[in-house]
Amino acid sequence: MTAAEILSVAAFDEGRHAQAFPSFGSERTGAPVVSYCRIDDKEIRTREPVMAPDAVIVQDVTLINQVDLFAGLSPEGYVLINTSRTFEELGLSELFTRFHRDHLVTCPATEIALEHFGRPLPNAALLGAFAALTQQVTLGAVQIAIRDHFAGAVGERNAEAAAAAFTVIITSKEELTHAAPN
Image (spheres, rainbow, N blue to C red):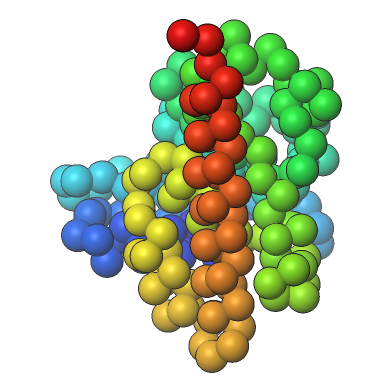
């Protein structure tokens, strides 16, 4: 929920229209939560859940086999998964036939958070990775929104985690580009 809110603030600060809201399944502690963020160049009037997302960020990799997380995602959509494993290692190779290969990335966001923040809270790192993957918001806007949300050293460390994840994704996209056949 926090990541969706910060992402919407980053987009808004860049002059776009944005909204963020959660959707709760069951009311037990630890139950999966889905959060939505809409970003557009024009006013957003709908308040309905997003049924056809342009991007999916999977914060908890254990949910992959529990729910069809990619339902409704168009072939032009983006997938970002919080893990150091590859899509092949996750058993998700079939996604390469459904989506553009350069729109599919994994990012060790939890490890990045531990390194920069000392806690396994991947939200900020995932937002940096999202900015690199989709270019829907800039890293600078994400970092400003993070610092506005989290005061002092906490905000600064989270902003650093976002930058580190941004670099991981940019580097992996460059490697993919160089590895592509001519």
